[in-house]
Image (cartoon, rainbow, N blue to C red; front, side, top):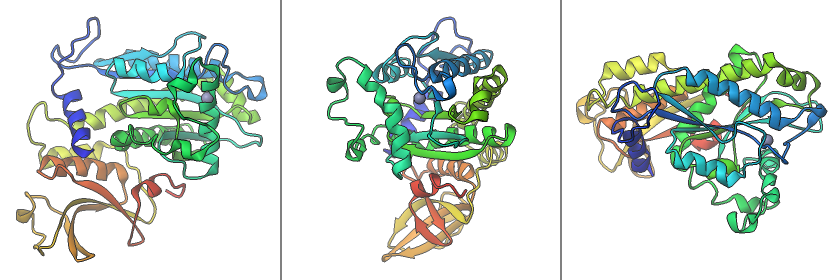
Length: 374
Ligand SMILES: [Zn+2]
């Protein structure tokens, strides 16, 4: 899994063998950064119609604005799953992204609830952490019943069964770090720039995310059923602002990825480069949480000096179950630790991975990243 992920980064950013005509590129040999923009629903599938607003129309307007902003950027190629009011099935949306060998898949939706709930959520694929997550995924997945031959396309899938989602996570797992990074950047912009209510980054089994083989997120831009938020999302101003927040996050993401994989110029990332990348990266702090990169587990007790660890500083050691665990870094900032992990991999620890500690206790990373109290 880990080496595959790394392979993806290398092939996407370093050995650009694809040359797409007509796209504006940084240089001729580099593959453009391909973003697939997916406006949820369309055609005979209106999505939710809270307060009489139409999710399919609002999602499309936001997506078109995001695309307009990204198309102005050099080195980016934008592909839309739909630019008009047409029905595209979930399977085909992912297939469009896969055929384009895209670097990112961003799906935009609007939420609904039978209360005055409001706020923004960005989803990455995973198991449902709770019932409410499953409900949101179910609502977005139900569209498959409007598709022809859905029984064949989504073999064995039943939106009403939680078990149906098990196994759905496998395909996207290797892109989870990057998906969460993008989701975090989007939520940051919504919350800090636009002052929207933060309902955080979450995980559930969205079929549309499952079909794509690249970092993928699904943005719930807010609740049409909420009187105030529905009116905001239906307005030109609201759509423009939400689109700006999303396109800005995509650009930050692209920069982060390029900084953390800047192998094109130099085969080895220097300490200065990684520090620069860290200082330029948005912080994503989690309260009471320490992230570390586990680089090694060994029965041998070693001194934590840099010369024992390919020059890596900030090494700590822990004894767990008869084994010594060696960690690199210690921070509550998830984006920082993501870059540090890449650096450790560069330095010769290809299977390095991130671990999380809450108040000193080791906890599951996915549990930390999808919890609300960050
Ligand atoms: Zn939707």
